[in-house]
Length: 69
Length: 319
Image 1: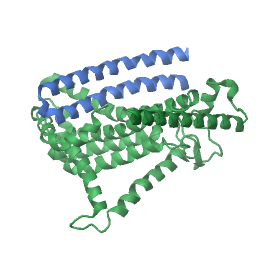
Image 2: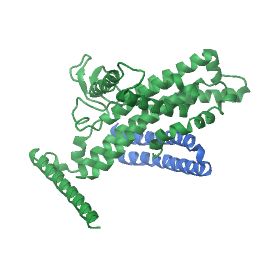
Image 3: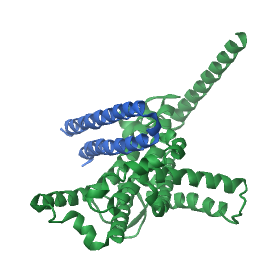
Image 4: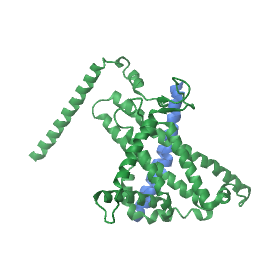
């Protein structure tokens, strides 16, 4: 039962993966449209990806916690 | 043609010899340890090698002689992560003090390198936070140096396996502590910039009627989420990386764990950058006034530092 719980918690990583993919696509097309603003777009993309990845890590941590507690 | 072929086959031969050497070392280690734990391969061996979420306490400062720490506990002790964070502090602070003595007008080689590094990082920070971020660069640099070096310290062979040494950021206590310090820091900066009435007025204002108050309360609760995500992102990345490395080095041999090791090096640096950048961004967010003038400020300063930060950011963008 613990392993099932951990497995279902690990499914929560699908969301951030999709989010980071969408952010990368938006950043790539924005750079393609306006190459001069590449630095600014890179900064915005890094921050967006960090936010999304943080939530994915929360899902993994909950999964690990269910195995330990 | 023949020279290229000869060079390729000689590197391949070197790699094969190196893999053979690693295999021999693995067999030797297995024989020396009496094949200990090999009966439960791989599950039992992995369980023996895993480091627990709670760090081992090296010196007990409380009343009990042997305290088995649980997940939610409050017991004073000097754990392996505290000892390792002292080592990290020495490694970061002592070279910086030694290298910045006797500053001259015309810099020598070492001072030149230090100035280049600091200016690169400051340019990166100003590119993200805008020109108003100058007073906060010291905290940004401190967070970045401590977190990056302590993430990398977890990759030194032996750290994490020996109970007295454990990467500081793989311990929930340390990451929660860092997040709490950052939380107090950016709220203090916000109150210092706006005054306590103005700062609380960002959340609990009746300016836009009842809906405005509701949105303000919601934003207040969102503020409480920020240190939680800061702490758990860092902890999950570093502790999860150590878990993955343990499993990988137990199951596979020779060169395959090196790929994960390289990824962990990169992730350690990236998590340091992300933590410091987020602290900087939250500080700038906390200092801005009411929402009418806030939203344009980010896009202009982000564009202003574009050319100078392109060099630093090109290494960051690959993630």
